[in-house]
Amino acid sequence: MSTPIRIRPLAAAEAAQRVPELADVLLDCVEGGASVSFMLPLSREKAEAFWRAVAEGVARGERVLLVAEDTDGRAVGTVQLVTAMPDNQPHRADVAKMLVHRRARRQGVAQRLLDAVDAQALAAGKTVLVLDTVTGSDAERLYARCGWQRVGSIPNYALMPDGAPCATTYFHKQLPAA
Image 1: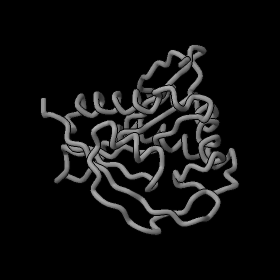
Image 2: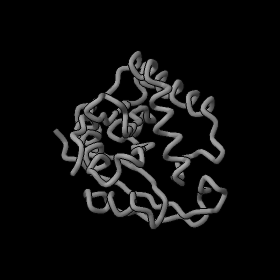
Image 3: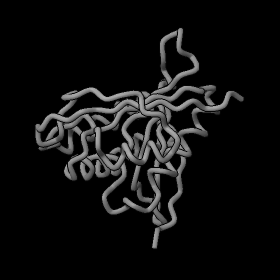
């Protein structure tokens, strides 16, 4: 049985206040083997510094931070919509750092975060979304099921948290213009 989950954007001030809680989600994902730019061992200090920088990006209007909360209001997942793009790409955004705590996986949290990203993107006037993920991962299958189009993969693109090389697959999604 799945737990009711609420998805909502966090304003910069709330994101800054919730840095320790957001760091918990990141630490869990990296410790669980997610290749999301960090290596093991990931210190709490480094995880919290990452989230402080995200909150600063939200404050500057460069990104939207969405959080998935359980019935107790605890963060169980996050995703970011990076909206700060070059002048010739005002219609595009990157989807980054889709993170779902292991205790909340396989409950539809990631799909709901993706639906919320689409809504936030359209509200921001973004109609082309791009993301990348580990080739062969559960996330790759999720993105394909959610209507994302596979562009291709790059071998040995990144490292898993334990140092093993991994390929990365790029996806794009075209949203209907308003």
